[in-house]
Image (cartoon, rainbow, N blue to C red; front, side, top):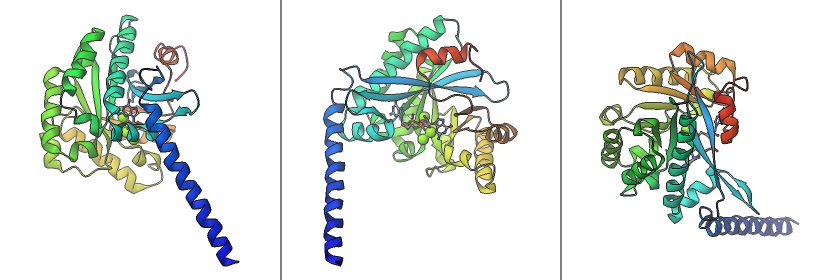
Length: 280
Ligand code: C2E
Ligand code: MG
Ligand code: MG
Ligand code: MG
């Protein structure tokens, strides 16, 4: 009986493996055409000034709407895009579209909005990324100070020399740079001090349990203090409750984003939000 069960278990395991590998192939194949077929969308999550409640800007978050696969999350397809190199085309599209949309909102009178765009590790290594970013900004008729690039701590720390050069190019251009998911990587303070940064983003894993875990509160406080010492702005992500917001405000965190204020929104809903047509 044991053997029969064992064999059945192996069969199921193989089937799951094949399914996973099959799905991966389908994603790879379909992703190659996603940009040209117009299947990518951007959602915008408001960034709130915790002291005033004002909308300071928004983070562009990509979605892939596939006719058969449905809505695919970036956690699933960005790694595939990185492995296959499609991330370059996707990155160009995201940057261009985020700048185009931001220009529309500026023209509608929301001239202070800063748009944050995520750049992944592999994308970061594309040699002419700065030129591509500049082309997107100029193409939309924006000024570089309206753009913030978000790059994860682990991507920066995996090649510090590269990061110092790249971040320096963006700073010289006039765009700002935020370190995303901060606290999950392994930054040395010496390295951090060398980087031409504007913002640290406290990873949502620390925010989530902050009310009841003293250790997570301590990490958040340390990041806020570090940002102060280095003269950087600090943003918290994943704010879901009033309690999260209150703790962060008391710590002196500048900006926050999370479901408490708004989920990532389609452009029309974001405009409603920022115009105060829907309650925060
Ligand atoms: P991220 O940049 O750290 O973005 C934050 C993620 O947290 C987003 O997930 C957002 O929808 C989610 N989030 C926001 N508020 C809350 C909250 O209150 N609670 C919880 N539980 N989650 C919240 P999303 O949109 O699925 O994106 C996941 C990751 O995919 C992003 O993490 C980013 O690393 C990557 N990504 C998204 N868009 C792009 C893009 O255009 N290019 C690149 N290279 N990566 C992207
Ligand atoms: Mg981000
Ligand atoms: Mg993050
Ligand atoms: Mg994250």
